[in-house]
Length: 172
Image (cartoon, rainbow, N blue to C red; front, side):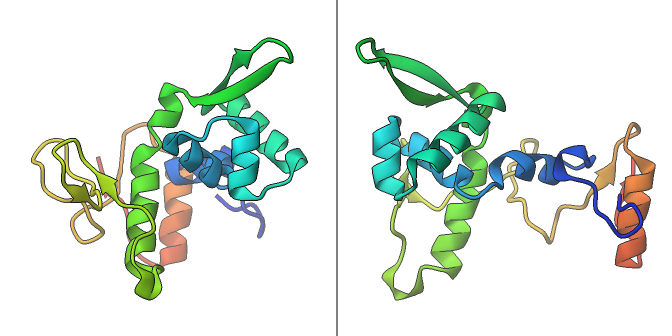
């Protein structure tokens, strides 16, 4: 909730999107996570593939390690060298990356089409989609509404509703 014209930092907001963006929204972080998903796990491979400076890469990897998204694993003793592996928390970002890829392939690919396709274990290429874990129906902006759980921050919800000029949340 804003304080006299200033927004709370992302990490302090009672919102899953804001708290996620606090970690993965930093410039380069999503690209690093994507590359580790693709199997580029070593510092030099990440640097070369992304064209990122050593200093920035080291800082971003440290951030991802500190937040528990990736872990460092030694793959060589002399000299000591590490690779980066996704933790279970990092693996849980897979749907986020799929959603970004799906959107980018649909709206930003131009005439070139998708740069990377994703093949499911069934052998078919899929753009990926979000589905309800209960009924299997697709999730979309047209059929999902936000609901406040009992322990929700009512002041935060009130500030969103005041800014929207209408009731946004279902009360649960």
